Image 1 (tube, rainbow, N blue to C red):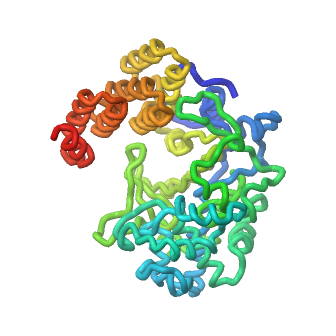
Image 2 (image 1 turned 120 degrees about the vertical axis):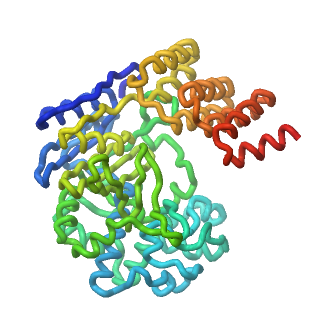
Image 3 (image 1 turned 45 degrees about the horizontal axis):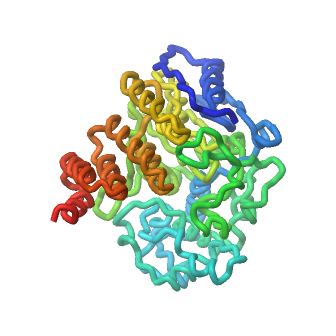
Length: 493
């Protein structure tokens, strides 16, 4: 895939009417600029409006993506797991406010309910380090859902918060939910999905694999940028997983399902026409969860306040329309199923190069609703980082100057610059790290977090006096920055 080191154009576009050609032009532009590689399916008012495929399912073999190309859908799978639980509730097999211990007898925590699991409010710990000792003892063993409770018991790790007190995205919750489905139905979770969801929805190209590393003939290869400053993708098989457990596990429930864009559309239509779940249970899934303090379980992303229901994420757009979705992210894979309930508009995107599908899907919803939208843009931090890495510091500085004059030429986020700066720091590329944080401070002059990060990089570089100035600026911008105040106290006294 060609390098993405040139500047992409952007414009604020407005259309009074929308055609398939306009959508085609939108995605053709993204594909030409290496901003989307995958499968697209869009429906407006319940009717198919656009379907197309871009790029390669296997770059090395030059095999193109087609309608039969199967993608792991990552965390979009969580909607299926929540659906399975709610189907059992509908049949009277469980109450979602039942304690988990009622069905999983060895589960070591009281007061955690099924609702807490599928709303991500259980307070359970993440599994990333839970199996470190077990992996050392059994290096050839592959861990599955059944191994989670024994690991929790052995580790004796406490809950991170009381059940219902806090929302925290956690795959362990949905692993346990899948176990509960198996316990009640006495069949494998993959067989439950096939019988109760895939078959009724006529999803003939969807399945939950027994071993996620074994691929079917139509399953796409996955590609990603190896670093935050890379401008060319590589096959994920050439990279190590971030956590060892990811290489040594076959967890299911939070992810794992393999599907196509067409099958996900069949799923969406069957679900929202109450073929898979009654209206009351579906509305419950799509209602924001309330925490113990009465506040909505939510987080902020892309300037949106996003609530979490039962396996679904929810927000209201600028026109006060209800949008529900779930997206997914694995190394080299992004996915999203997003549905405007008010208008009955749906966008499904599956990418095997980890394209920014959430931003793209939201712009497409605007496009098909005849509203102003923006073309997704090239990442400024990635282009900037690639110039630093190649030794072109003057060009990198010039890029920032040009961006500050014309801020609609790239996508620039505080998060991306922060990640780039820290990656350079971890790789002991200190000069690049400091330049990155200095540029970030120019772009985000009111960000306390950027100055805090800049201070940390300066401190690690032995530049104490400069670090103090950055921490002082951070605390000035955010008096509640306890980390900054703690570091300053240690440095000044």
